[in-house]
Length: 466
Image 1 (cartoon, rainbow, N blue to C red):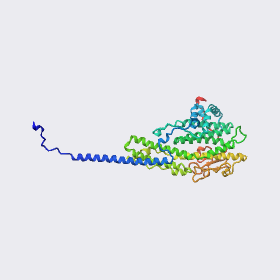
Image 2: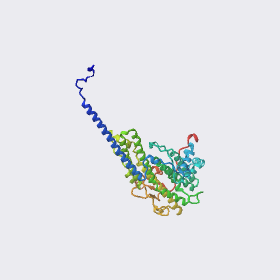
Image 3: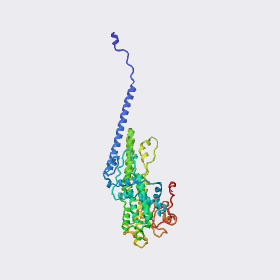
């Protein structure tokens, strides 16, 4: 029995030392990977924290949390409340939609009748717009959530339709001789755009610019025949025109508005990096560093928002980095997906500013005509300082050039050099008084000072409601 418990006398089996070394090497490699990942994550976090601190020190919003402040305005002092109520009230028929989309004077008789009926039907909504215009702030209290690109902006379409109806009300008022009312409706349209701009998103800003352009399109037809005396049932007053000129020339909020929209784009890019990083923890630092490259580009865009003109802004817009292929594409997962092309936004901004300055100049010329027996001023300098504080600069021209003026044309007009920055009126024979009357087909951006001879071409009303 003792033999059953004796130690074996045979030698031990050979040990596989290479397996031991391989296991140790694997542990060292794993530790190194973890160490590198921790170091990488620490670098990305420190850079992110520094960027966030700098933005917040400048008073800028850069995180989703920065956009989640609750509304502090009571309804009666909130322009958004009245504009939402106006938009919700409108249930336009196809025929009404067709009629209010007509943008030129004179309104055809059937259009005039439908617009008049629509304006009377929605008088309470138009009154809400007027109330909103006189309020200083609009807090929309949007449902802010991550990812930011999925945030809904349900007020944009109703605001556009409300602005379209208000613009139609301005044209209708002008045609029936209520020039004072027409200018007030134009101011209402512009107020809708300013309120929408308070949403601080780029798409909201572009919609706001479109709404403001609708107001200027109404002025294109109202200003050349604007009555300031007893020749119309309700003429505009000089004080009313001067107030509108002042508003049109007030660019103090323009750069701030587009800068706010770029801040929200920057916040959305950072938020997207965090959303993707939550699903790809291993490469999260790389996603953050990639997003920080977008943040740097966003900072450059915000700086470009304060450029004096479109050519100067275009030089400040950062060019995208050259493309990469292969595994390196993973390092640009956020930037290649989220980098928008924003140079067009700057061009739209500058074009809108040019339209406003041309409209203000045209109104000042109309005031001059009223005071000088219908005569046009010999130069734009003749408007200063009685009608304009200074000749407005052309934001589409480089180097601080003023807007231009052709008083001796068959159809006199003021104009900007347009988006190509070249004065085609002098160099080419395209003149709108001789070859083209459509502002959208012209290489330069012009504003007629007398009613154009062309009549508006409009589609027929919907077939089911003729």
